Image 1 (cartoon, helix red, strand yellow):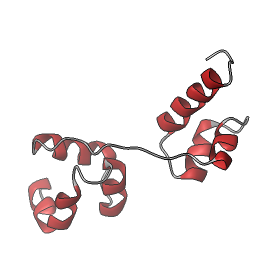
Image 2 (cartoon, one colour):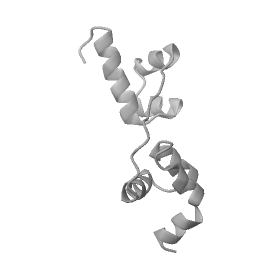
Image 3 (spheres, one colour):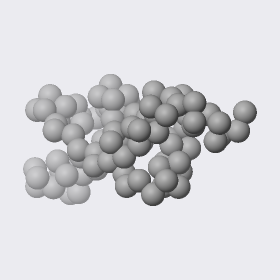
Image 4 (tube, helix red, strand yellow):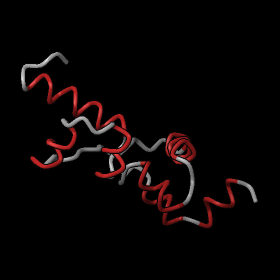
Length: 97
């Protein structure tokens, strides 16, 4: 089955493009992040604004010695989000960032 047919069968998934993060669409549809991203771009749909309000507990875990991949898994975030937040926390705390 071609990609076009698969996407037509999942119109609901296409309606999510640009409204929720690509990574969430990928999880819901069983597609890769890259496939979802490519489809969204091909349709000319801008990416959703991914924003996460971090709690004190999340910041504590992100700032700990736990590896970024493990923190991302525990919090349901992407690794780049964890690394970015870790850098920001270091700057806010006056560390080397």
